[in-house]
Amino acid sequence: MILDDNSKFGLRALTRAIGAIEATPTQIRDLELFKPVYLSDTKVDIEQQDTTLKLVQAKPRDGGTPDAVPVKNRNIRTFRIPHLPVHDSVLAEDVQGLRAFGTTEAETVMAKVEAKLADGKQNLEYTREHLMLGALLGKILDADGSEIYDIYQEFGLTRTSYDMKLSTETTEVGRQIDEALAKQRSALRGAAVTGWVALCGFEFIEALKYHQSVKPLYERWREGAAYREADGINPIEFVHNGIRFIHYTGNFGKAKLDDDKAILLPTGPGRLYEEYFAPANYTETVNTVALPYYAKREPMKFGKGYDLEMQSNPLPLVLRPDLVATLTA
Image (tube, rainbow, N blue to C red; front, side, top):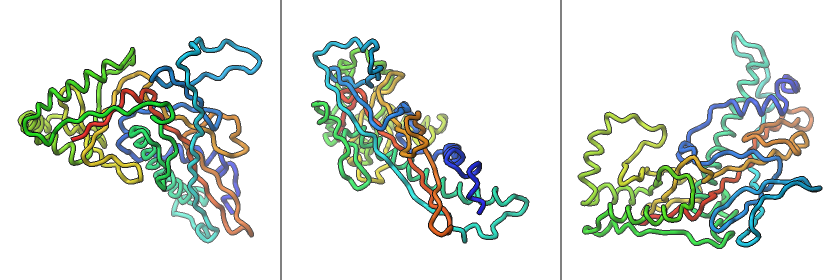
């Protein structure tokens, strides 16, 4: 069977293949908030200094210069990185006599395998989006809704929330936004923040755009929309008082953004958000630097085909949870 060929269908070849498949865009990943960090371990130690979280640098066991951090106000937590496997199979009958015109058998079988890899990768990408949304909401949830980590509880922090009072006609929305941003900026403490994004539920974004103090500004914004280029999967709904408001539509899992709420997020070049990747749980990948995706095949009993596994091992974390806030309509 052509799938027996390790040079074409082994761990390295399939991992390269799944990595080369074009990513399916999702809203949070499209914003490029989370910077990837590729680890050689299955857990990560996160240190809290006041309300700032940082990755702890590993040191040799027999010495090395430790990080110069005062003992007080240190709080270190170890987070195990979730393991996300997806399974499929390629049966012998699936590739029996299969060869497209003008191609070799290996090329045709690889195309079938790549189609399965693409399906698996898409599931993994949506799962990563689900984990990221949970991280931004403060609770990272598994696919079944069970809690993986409550970041605010882990580090003894309280989520900041602002009532925008959008249901009150006399509210000066611009002033409400200014006050919220002023409070958030006062907590920066040197963080490199250059902008703000708000991921909004439908009711929130509608109440904002059509509030009497905002509607004339929004209408002028819409008049100029034809002259602005679309922004990928995240078209800018509205920019007001320094915040880019986006209608978030990625509620496809247990982690959900309520319709009447928004998440206020700082953006910038600093280490505000990171996504940690662990290596796959294969003997070939022990103590190696992680990749975002892996794929491997294993022969079935009696030579009936191959089981196919795709996996990713990501953990997204917000390193400045004090700078992320909830806005309510």
